[in-house]
Amino acid sequence: MNYMLTISLFILSVVLCAFMVRFNISATPTQRCSHNAPTPTAGGLVFFLIFFVNLAFMYLMDDQLSKMIPPQHGLIRHYFIAVSILIIVGLHDDCNPLSYRRRLIAQFICALLIVLGGGIIESPVIEIDSTSVLFFQKILTLFTFLCLINAANFIDGLNGLLSLCVMITLAFASLWVNFCPPLVTMYSVLIVAILGFFVFNFPKGRLFMGDTGSTFLGFTLGFLALFAQPHYPRIFAPETAIFNKGFVFTLLPMAFLWFDVAFTLCRRAVRGCRLTEAHRDHMIHILYDKGYGHIFVTPLYAACTCIMGCLTYMCHKEWLSFIGLLAIYTVLQGIVMICIFNAPHRQKWIRTKKSSI
Image (tube, rainbow, N blue to C red; front, top):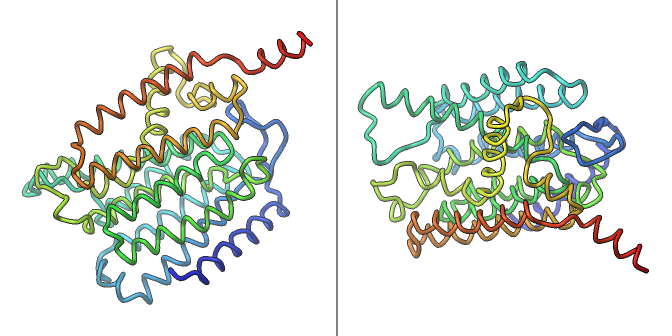
């Protein structure tokens, strides 16, 4: 993508975000939110529109994309339909909150559309020569997409957190596909579109992406991971891989955030809490509630994403085994957990310091 187009898309994103601020679809603070006053939301509509239009143009006009995805292949067409449904539901939820059952039904339909379009998580070690194996892979893909949609929604609780980590993840994703031009163009367009929103969202939170943006990002990350599978360099894709490395590596840089969601849900389930209730039990919320604001927590998890991206790159180049990567990640995740749960409250420091003067 050339520089003029990049700058133009960034300016367009900024202008549209400014319009969304003026349009003012206000988000009323809930228990899960980290803001106290109604704030303009649904900013995710901006980067959805930019990415959607660009992908549609590429699909209709770009010869390279046509060669990658033949016209008879339904994955992209099904993605267009599914993501449109997801955006409509998300926008409705931002304006007038829906029950979790209705949201879940819509998300299930969107994930099912991807599977019906031919999108499945490849498993090189398993030959798809039976109906049962193919059925298992379809169920796995369906479940994975539902998890990605909801996980992205759950971790969108602090200014700039999800958007910054997604931009870093997409930047690393270019490495896994050997800088395949159409894929890099898609990554770049989405990064630039999100960057325009990021200007309004971090650190002061003048505009939120809302469910419109968070569910779109989770769903689109899964779609891009599926899209990357056939273009992961074969020299780095041994047939002993349980799952296609192009898919796994696309999502792996955000491992710290995915773990936060899984760990929190398991912890709440053990404590007997309702998993569908809004809450502030995520580690990012715990750290924030201890007085470490957006300017600390968001860069911290962005740094974790960069570290995980570098480790993934080492594994991609076969400088580090996947088992070694998991071992290092486990140690780092343990250190992060210990630091978060044992971090002192900064408010106490401030009060003590003031009272001692």
